[in-house]
Length: 381
Image (cartoon, rainbow, N blue to C red; front, side):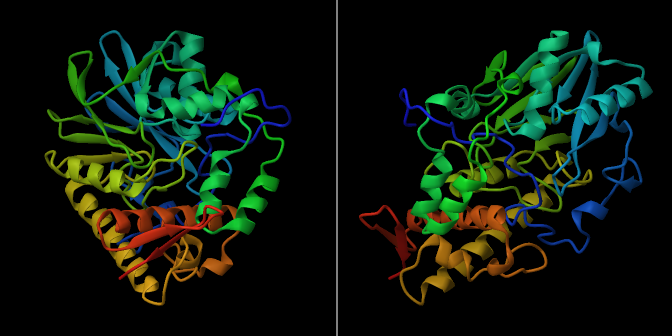
């Protein structure tokens, strides 16, 4: 991270990485039902339906609204314990979300002041900000993966950062025009530091968390973000999966405020790690409750292997940038052409493709070379 006493407008380092359905949250890898119309078995209704839906004894799912996000809602899970409530994720810190959380907690006999702990799967706005705000307000303890600390550091240091790091990733992907458009689109935006305070505890490595009489395994699953955690209660056979394992879509890869070398490699390794757990009922952050974590992990791994092969096929024509390769690939469950995507989604698609190409290089299936301007070209033998 470049730092210093640089003057001028800070970059937009807002961690709302998914304001709308993006090609990096590709719908329906194997399902014919779109996410918006998926029915959750705990409610018997669309998964976004308002309510506190019981998913297990002492555990309820509360979908909270996500304005400006094509996914419409995030599932926050409420775990009852002897000395208060523990919430898996907190939601997006907006008035509509706060009001609905209070209403749904009241349906099961609780209020926000009964919350004692937030276990947050990762740092994205729709998961973290309401936990940060409510945690400070009601004195609830907030825990977050330490791998997401660099992202929060970047937020705190925003006024000293010369350039949004995303621009460098786009340029190295060959998306030069997109980088300029991205910079213009976010010019003058300032992160609201009231929403981005540091957690009370950093989760570091795999370990167990006691929630009343329950024992929950906190499992580090980097990929979507470097600090992502899932939480498994093996005794009841459930997995609070955050964005790591989603039932009808796949999370964005390769788009973090602080870029990493192998985001897709990290993600697929984390999927394999979760596959090594018992087959658990899937409680995702977005979408309906699903029966088998193993089945979904297998689908996601197969999906990315298929995308990797498509990238190899694209490189047969000769050396190409990630932007070039992205232009040959289909995007979303409707197989949209890259040329039809808007600036936001074109940028995400380019960075996602870059992550796939970097994994091909790491596997020895391709090589890379970098121009004097920092643009990365990938080629096969």
